[in-house]
Length: 328
Image 1 (cartoon, rainbow, N blue to C red):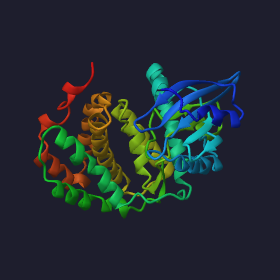
Image 2 (image 1 turned 90 degrees about the vertical axis):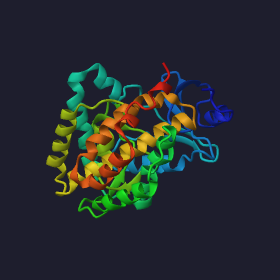
Image 3 (image 1 turned 45 degrees about the vertical axis):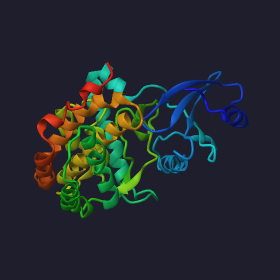
Image 4 (image 1 turned 180 degrees about the vertical axis):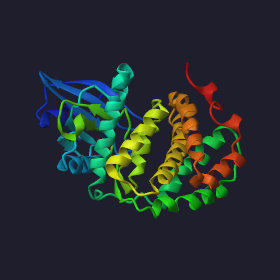
């Protein structure tokens, strides 16, 4: 986590020339983050190196969100060609660690996170691409592209595509409005901040936003890949969303379909992070992802997809099939 060579000149031009730069975090992408400290001032340096990353979508969505009263980081300086962006620092208090340290706060924090989504879903979608069939299929296909080969399991890939084609119209033809889908709305990307606006929650990691179904971000929040959200909390928050957003009757079925699609995608992504990118720690999350996927597959709307999994991936090739590769 050494700052990029261009960082000192970029920070000097932005008025942070004497600041200390310390590693903050990386994530599952090529992006890296550094905290920039100059006396009492704090900011975050995002290194989104081209050609792997492009900071423009992050900036566009951040400005869209702040323009509507949500707490996304303010953009303090930018070098688009170099992939450097200086952004507001929301501190270190993530929802994940807060609710793990204070379990009694879990329902309140998640209720606020659902309230924020309901507010977002009352607005027209941002000017972003559509979450369309091609994207759904490409993402779901990560499971057969990466996970199945990793466990040396031949499967019927065309039947997998066909199964998803038979259930995705329920989402595409839903009576729900098309909204901004942040796509990574979960406890590690939501900060607790001292601000009345945006329900006291700061938003991160939304650069891949698309225009799609409102259930997707609820799935991302309540079927979290990185922490166990108790089923009773998930049920309570779904009931809360229904009460404040009054979604159409097909909402629960769409939630299940998008949950299965997202969880299948993440199983593929976590396997790819191990096989391609040398990040085996993500394999430790696969049992959780299989648990979530199997819960979603019980819904009648997912019948064809559930049948494919039964026919193609035996139980012993699911939850713990790759655990021997998890680092100790």
